Length: 405
Image (cartoon, rainbow, N blue to C red):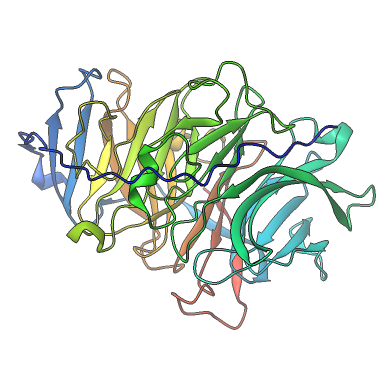
C-alpha cells in the first residue's frame, strides 16, 4: 500500500470580514410541547425549503423513548474515538496517546500501541477509523497531535494491526501539517459510503482560516485511503471537501452524498458565545464560520438545521440504523460535552435539512459524553469524557457504553 504525505500549506488568509447579516424572521414554536424556548425561520438561501430551529433557552424537550445504558468497558482515560473491527472487537484511542483493544466487552490490560503525542488542551490522540478492507489489509488510521521538530502539528497516519491483534505499527503519514492550537483541533475520522477517508479539523483558534480553502484548518477533508486527493473533490487537487467550520467532532451520512455535521460555536471570540450547530451539507459547501450567527446564513453558506443559544457543545454524532431502538431509526444521535446529555434529532422527511423534532436523553446522568458511533450492526456506542480536565473523573475513570432498549 502506498501512503503519501500531501498538501502542506501554512498560508493563512488574513482578512477582515465585514458582513452585514440580514435579519431572520423567527416564528415562535409550540411552547407547550417544549421545555426549551424555540423559534424556526425560513431562510432566503438556495436551500429554499430548509428551516432553521433556534433553541433560545436550554437544550430541548426530554426524550420520549425508553432507553437503557449498558457498560461495555471502564478504566479508560478520555476515550476519544472507536473503530469497530470485523470480528466484533474495538480499537479505542485515549487522548494521552494510547490505542486500546476491547474484546468481548473487556478492556485488554495493555495498550496495543502508544504514540508520543502532544496532549495539552484539546490535542492528543483523537480520532480513529478502520480501513473498509480491514479484513484483508488490517489497516486503520489515527488523528493525533505531535511535536514535529519543535513545531506542533495535527497529523493523520496509517497503522497496521498485527495478526494476533495485540500490537500495531505505523505505516505512513496520510495528511500532515494540519494546523494546531491549544483548542479547536477537530479530530474526527470516518470512512464514507464511497470508501473515502473523511477528516474533521478545527480552526486552531484562527477563525479566518476556515474560509481559506488553501488551509487545512476548519474543514472536512476527503482523501483516498492512500492519501491521494480524489478527482471528484470539489476543488481541484485539494483535499478540502467542506469549509467554514469552527471545530467539528462529529459527522455522519444522511445518504451517499449528504453529510450531517455538528460544529462548536464561539466561546468568547468575536464577542459571542453559544451557537453550537447541526448542519446538513454536500461537497463544496461552506458552513459559514466565522461570519454567520445563529440561524442567519451568509450569502454563500449553508443554512443551519439546529442552533442552540446555550453552549452544548457537541462531540461525536451518528445516524441511528440499529434494531434495538426502532423509534430512533434514521435519527441523528449526538454526544454532548458541557451540557452532559445525549441528543436526538429527527429530520423532516419532506424538507431535507429541516428539523422535525429534537429531544434530550440521559441529562446529567453520565457526565460529559465524547464519542457517539454506530457499530457495524447499527447499534449505538458512546464514550464518557469525565477525565479530560473539565469533568469529575470517577475512580473507575471513563467508560464505553452501549445504548439499548
